[in-house]
Image (cartoon, rainbow, N blue to C red; front, side, top):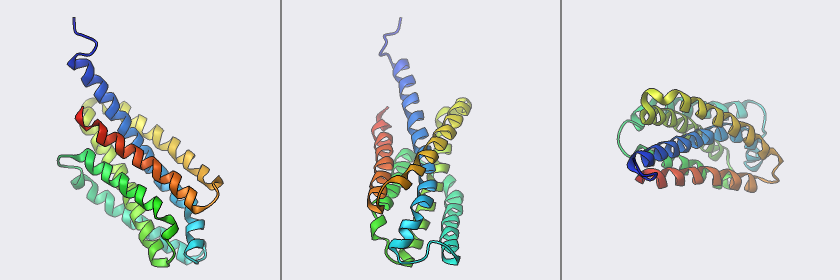
Length: 191
């Protein structure tokens, strides 16, 4: 009889932990896509531009372009080794973006912020799906569905940023989440 801490049991626990980390990373991609929209009026005001009109449209098109770019680059980004570290690096980029929200004071900075946020969103989304499929193989479908559920929950939760006073607090709360998930991914590498 195998011990409760035997290699097979530890491998199963590791797989569940990794699956949960990937689901949380997918949740962060949901947080990224919604929080950028929620924070946009404050970001635009901070950059002294109107939050409606053609400038806003161009900013969101910039984000969309970066999302398409990341979607095309994603499979090659996550095709080698140390992919969990790459995903963690993208999450840390997202964390840094949120910490930098109060420094977005010019139109160009706003475009760059939205482009980087769009890239981080799509790279996290694509990377999470690829890594989940790779880790679980034929049995990935329940985990991919779990990823979608967590994505949806984080999308809804991100809308609560609207109620936080000030761009700085919104950015700080938003920065903690991806940093925490990146830590989970890095800490779980040994398993």
